[in-house]
Length: 141
Image (cartoon, rainbow, N blue to C red; front, side):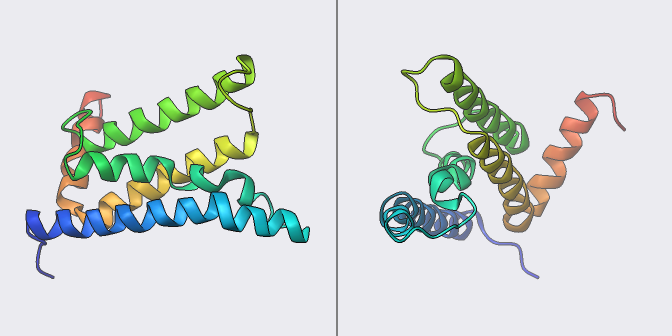
């Protein structure tokens, strides 16, 4: 399998980012309204809408160059996930931030896991290199 060029990879990431933003918008607006209006039990999906893709969309934004957290993409994913988790926990303590929901925490962890898998699928070389750096930092070989 040919390795994607950097330019092709960025276009793919941009297309994926736009698709996830649209999907997140639809989940939090139309889908949520439809589920609530019709009393459908979707196991909380309507409530966590954006959080399912939160880490992924922010990571994709970083990978295409809109901002940079760190050169190591795995650490970037961890920082974004931790930031969102911290914000969600703080929303339980400080009510003006938002409303705390345990399902949101689970959705954010799911989003972080999906983003790690996406990194592996899109750029396995960067994944292996970054994972090796993280493992070395924490004392692994």
